[in-house]
Image (cartoon, rainbow, N blue to C red; front, side):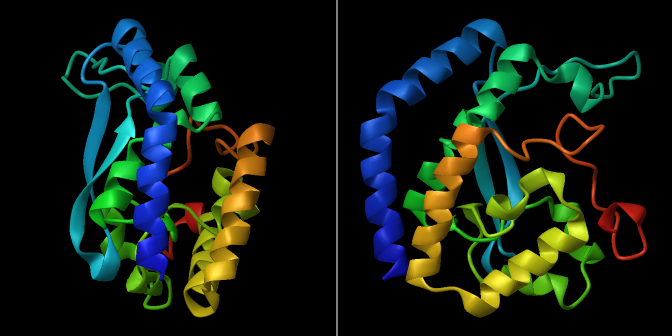
Length: 201
């Protein structure tokens, strides 16, 4: 039932939002440049890797050593607006359509975090990741990693169709309120460094 709901909803969403997607893509091409879509491998269900798609919000500026500059330097004002409105997440509807992710589930994080999870935290991969999730409607990037993972595992243990509906409705409210977009002192969020790292606390 969840997969059928995901497929149908993402297909309808892509059709309805196609003008928004096209205009956003055009503006990103003009204001930030190519590529328009940011593609990166992330772990999904049971840790299986897939490519997640997002609209690009940062430039590719590098330092003299060829290393990318910090996020807060590369994040443009237009990119901030795209993130504030959660427009950068729209290409993930294609991921939902393909079955890589669900509309609702723990957010797909970086591959490098896989070896840093505790056994309990790793349980977030027992379900498909999602565009939005229980952690996103309960603080998003404004809460600690420890709190995020606890909320993710809670979702794994308590997931249901009606909980997903509730999360989707709360997500719409969060988007309009623009809450929890970034962590204090960071352009997005501090990197997770594992159970022994301060960023989890």
